[in-house]
Length: 557
Image 1 (cartoon, rainbow, N blue to C red):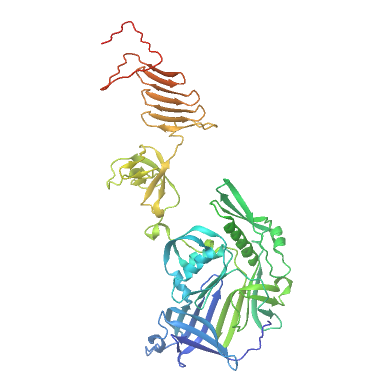
Image 2 (tube, rainbow, N blue to C red):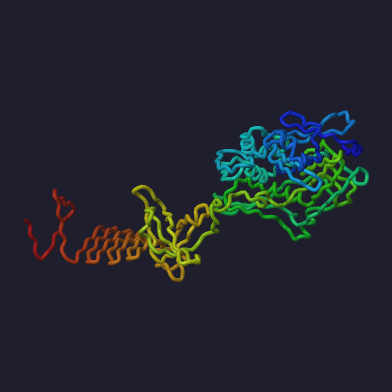
């Protein structure tokens, strides 16, 4: 539908609070309504209020613009028979009064009701759920906010974890990686794939009243293809999937493939070294492809007020030259009303940056209780004894600390630990250990493990075959597994030992006194350097095909 720029009559603005119309005596200076894809819509009102000298502030002192009130802004052109058109509905989140050279100004900030989704961080687990169902669930938990159109997503997640982030940020994160455009307008939140259908409205520069325009062509994020690389648990290999989505907007003569070649961009590789099912990986690749294509042509232009456009609508721009003329998707609308005039700024295109990389989604390190600590740290064990708080901790020196008080008590991870049971290998003084920190709080270190180095060398040298595994204590007691020779050895420091040999199919036990017991396919051989004594409280029963007893002296008592 061609845009009509003939509406130049005075614009009437009606503001209601809780259903009550704003009194005529309120001096409304301007109205701004801003709607953007992937952002919560908001509006601002500017009014003259009161007298600084008399200290009387009629509007501010009333309850009409109290925070939390529900506000509806409607407009119509005077003389237009179609009547009023609703532009914005939301709740007041802030208002301010200030003195300027021209008088006292009251500013009122209004946000869509979906702002409620941004005010609290939450932690939740969702099982067996699709992203579209998750989005609906997040929206449905807020009074005054309802779900609009939500494109169904295919992947069913075994588990989705929301950790200490707002429902809005969680929603946007999952919507974006599925290629959904989110709009929050008049209390309705929608998340849909972009439509590449017929243009809802067309605008022609030079024919229609276009006040200004700002158009950009950006080659930086154009790629020949988008590929995801994820970990396949079954094959233990990286799995690759390339987007096959088609971008069908009829834009200008610039082609993304040509720009990609000019930039030397072959394909955009997105890597996640966790298992991701094929449906999710495919949606991720498709989302990235569309996002980069929508970043090629970006811009905005301003025209006389337009109330019929919505976020996500397709528009056609004409008269902007062969590079910028063509179809685009509306990604932003700004309505500015002042002095009886209504100007609408229409925005198209998207940033190529992911929402998750542009916005701080996670909480401050160490919950902001103190400056957090980055990454893993090196520690040197001082003692494994004497924890003053009896928490089974180990005293560790942190060489990176500047002052002399550089030792801290750290908890120790283990393979198994519980009440009166577990596996315990306390580190020794001088051991080099790696420290992690719970919630990045430097007051809560955990020993993740010990490491070898030039000073602390392993007892068994590394080899290409890597055939030996085992445990050696500081006194020299050993439990050794030898995959090359297929043996298991248990040995004390004074050479008491048990050897289980798979190749020779025998078990040998030897002590430091020269005594031995051998079990093999030839039978059992028991040797003693001195005496052998057999005692039993009950009977001794010896049976065999033949029994031989040989000795220089044989006593039968």
